[in-house]
Length: 502
Image 1 (tube, rainbow, N blue to C red):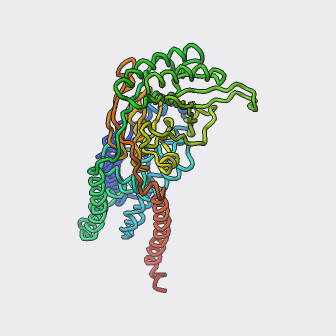
Image 2: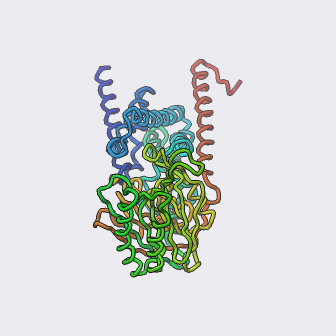
Image 3: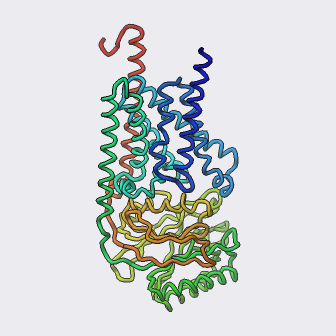
């Protein structure tokens, strides 16, 4: 009889693992279906409450690893990450998920239900924040990005950033698992846990609905975006190739200007420009801006040869801004994509622009900069109501990575205009609504004209930053203390003494 029970338990565990893996696989990744992540942890959490610690940890870790295979084609195929690094990434994600499940299990099995409720999300959010501070990809691994299309919930980012979103996204299925497990033993307790969590979510959604219902203030601005996916795997070579490519870009840019665009944004690293040639290069694009009365933001790879205090060649991933009748402004990208941009010198300064009407402040960032909350908060603190973002994606990740910038606008109160080759051209407002989008390979030169709010909105996240991440870390610390306490109490109770009564 025992082998039959073992076989049945193993089968239940495998089904739980595969169910969670499938929900994670389709609920996150390159094109996530957001409702699935509200249920994804439930099967492994329920299994953990009835299984041994080793079984629970193994199946939970495997579920996360299998689920994250949804981005293998991007990590291995497009980014060409070495297998050794991929193994470390996947094992780390699996181990952290397993530890979160074990912490939940240890508390729930000892009837510390409220601690179990917050332990699972607190550990996951603490890990996300640690990656944000230490890894080169910032917030890139946050579960919150699976919810970008769930607009009422997305508004929570204006208060807590991605951290509160990830926390509640993990807390609700945790509460559901507890309620299901307690339906016979302590149904009222389970109902209280689930009801309290659902009430918090309901309050968040009411806040989100109200925030979405408030119309944006100020005068909108018409923005144009242009991108082309040519045969180049990198920026066009300096000299004639770059000049010819920008001349080709100038034609649709001029058309957008005649249609009313105040600014036209081109992609990141369209071509290489030697530092000695910037005068001639700038003259051509400045003429485009002056003749069409339009501001132009162009992404280039500026190369400074050795000399003038630089013993080696220096490269800058730069956005050059051409304003009618004004000097050229520049912005150097701060956050590089390893290993592709490891030889590029990062910038350190913001670039702020005033709209032609004088009624708005604009900022400039480049692609991966928008994976990080800190830079966007600096722009928000400077009053930016619109951030212009040249970008370059890998086709596969035009949603998964390209749309990350949307959350930065919700967090720090500005609209986002992002023009990326290998991806899409889109504009979004400070509520995360996409106002217009077109794929960069839709035509030889994809172009988009859209009206965008440029009014800055001060948010709680802008004022307080990562406050909720600190709350999650504090919750995790308290849960670790609590689990040590309840384990010690359980062991003492089995020995016939209760140290809490001594």
